[in-house]
View 1 (cartoon, rainbow, N blue to C red):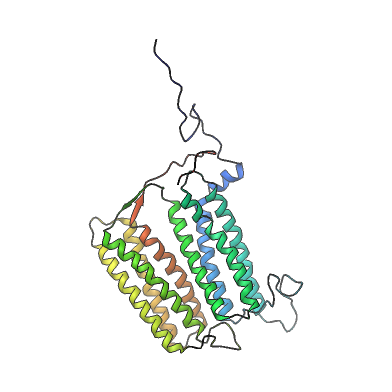
View 2 (cartoon, rainbow, N blue to C red; view 1 turned 135 degrees about the vertical axis):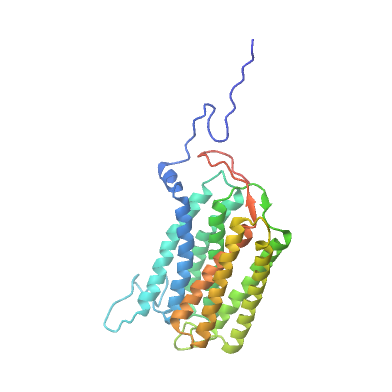
Length: 334
């Protein structure tokens, strides 16, 4: 007699090959749009930098006098003949924060509920939501302390960190959770890490330059930081040149390798183009007296540059794919 054995259930389904439910129908429908949600999250994180910049550049930081209400006992701005645009600009930024919060909740639900993915990836999916909550609180503190420049600057830097985390999350969503396999030399990967370190002082000095110049966010106290704007601008320019020099070294290390890993090459070239454009806008705004439009474009460029720089090191390696079969009770990966 030939011995019989019971079929062993695969991680992707039951013993008879059928697939187990991946949760409620709404979650399955949402998961089919996961990439669109993650793209929307990154776009909204960059967008909030732009609208926050509009608040600062127009001196609308106290357009709403209280928080979380716009005015005492009133959620929206009060309209009357003497009303200017400041309350609406500030309220518009707060409204986008609400939209971003909804997107962040969707991201958290999508990523954290996917037990097929590693715990590290799932924790990364919670960062946008935690960041939005933190930013809402910091935004309220900013109003309560009458736009203290350090709080305003910290508000922007946290937004940049959330842009970086959102870009990394979008990139990781296309990867598996297997061991990382390098696609570039050790020298290139080390240079990419150094480049990310150099990005931090460049962003910090950019914030200080804005806070010590005429677009510090308060029309009654134009120069919030007691620093020489020209001197701080020179320091910021030096940090940009250092970042660009490191990027050029990285580009040389990546592009001269044959065969060139496609994603690595594209991400380095994209970052180089964004950096050069951003530098051009920076010099243009300096020599044209800091027009509001160019300063706003520079803030947008800083967010785009942060996102582009974040994915460069991630493109210098690949990760093996994971089983993407819908499983409701598969063990989480670590």
